[in-house]
Image (tube, rainbow, N blue to C red; front, side):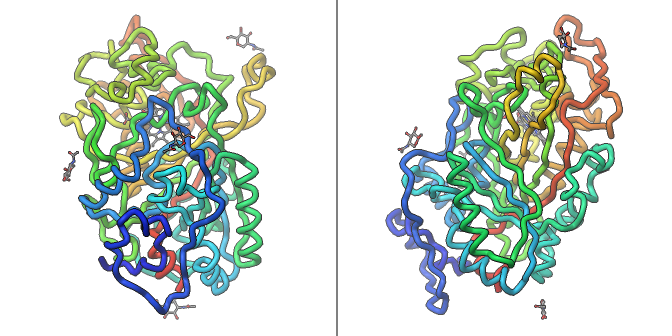
Length: 481
Ligand code: HEM
Ligand SMILES: *[C@@H]1O[C@H](CO)[C@@H](O)[C@H](O)[C@H]1NC(C)=O
Ligand SMILES: *[C@@H]1O[C@H](CO)[C@@H](O)[C@H](O)[C@H]1NC(C)=O
Ligand SMILES: *[C@@H]1O[C@H](CO)[C@@H](O)[C@H](O)[C@H]1NC(C)=O
Ligand SMILES: *[C@@H]1O[C@H](CO)[C@@H](O)[C@H](O)[C@H]1NC(C)=O
């Protein structure tokens, strides 16, 4: 145990028995993590039946101890998936380095929510706070160690073309420069709680940082909580992580912690010691043209029906009972149908995790998706006019230990290209050819060889940035010294 994290242990671990593993005492540190009060009684997370559940504290602790993961050092947003009720992404610039570093340790660190804290309603804070830095932010903090990820190093602006974006004219202007040093994630069950947390943090930080841009997201209103704006239940196939999830559900692979977390078992990158337990956070603001989409093939584009039922197992109609059954809704490998009579080869979930198509059920390249919808529900005017008047979409977040093996590979090599032998075209949801027409087969179940020509992108990239979500021990150590 090389972490000096005794100074950042949340009070909760003192009565969960993990504290014994954290024997090092740093008496020179004045920093103490206090249990924030008052505590909540209701979870700040949604829990749709079709998504994998967040493990119990006991189950996660047992799994973590067996695998050597320190859930008190890993920020709380990384492993819990697409479950926040309300979330604010607050992009900031560092204005006064010395003052920012001091306040990072004294004002931000005590409020950072750990993974352990998220596992029980009674230990969740009123508002979750997490922080992540861009390479420009690490530069500003004079942290010169390489994190061993060239995409992170270069930043997302440099990557627009590689990702299939038609340039950066559609990008939110703030994402096109180098002014974003980091992002603060605030999550709660009410916007009021989030606003309170933002104002108190802003007043504590004073002039040490500036707000560059923000985006607020929310789970869609009942009965659509957990569904993205096109209507489909999301977050179903987030991977079970060894050391966190007690055991994989049917059809899930046993994913090494190091696919998601830097420096853990299964991460083959070269990383500084202080980065262990961190994760690269990819942020993308993906606008969705909901009223414009007039196609009857939505389920075949996604590979799931709106309920989450996989098209592979239920090709012709939605099966809401299957969709809501987390023990069955991932239990397929695409070997069930050999042509496109089941799931089209180009469907979004097949493109982003091909399963047996690549000869093995576990193709690796897992990401943990932790995004949330943003923007309002479609208004009656928008529905009548078939035209978006207020932007909505997905505040996409993925965590992975290497961006080029995770998000970037899925987007560039799988979603945007014809990589299967069948030449069925790019992903109809997120595949992007710099705005060019996308020709896709398999969408029409009555003639699966027919080519459908998609002349507009239903998902428009508004840009984003690549960040690193450090372990708490680095926030109290390397980054604030
Ligand atoms: C607005 C944009 C997007 C929408 C509307 C969307 C929607 C969905 C939906 C409805 C599912 C099925 C639910 C599930 O299996 O969890 C899904 C799965 C998935 N999506 Fe997306 N998605 C979007 C962007 C992305 C991007 C940018 C990536 C990565 C480059 C991505 C990667 C994945 C992955 C890996 C899965 C799970 C595949 C599996 O393991 O079966 N998605 N998405
Ligand atoms: C936590 O809160 C959720 C939703 O408010 C509830 O369904 C669940 O039973 C609670 N869990 C515990 C352990 O109290
Ligand atoms: C930046 O860090 C280097 C060591 O990596 C140190 O020599 C230098 O003084 C630091 N600069 C500032 C402005 O803190
Ligand atoms: C997952 O894999 C690890 C080895 O990487 C192993 O120790 C663990 O027991 C496996 N878990 C399950 C549930 O199969
Ligand atoms: C909107 O789309 C529907 C269905 O395709 C169509 O009947 C209607 O005329 C369209 N409305 C406008 C204003 O174009």
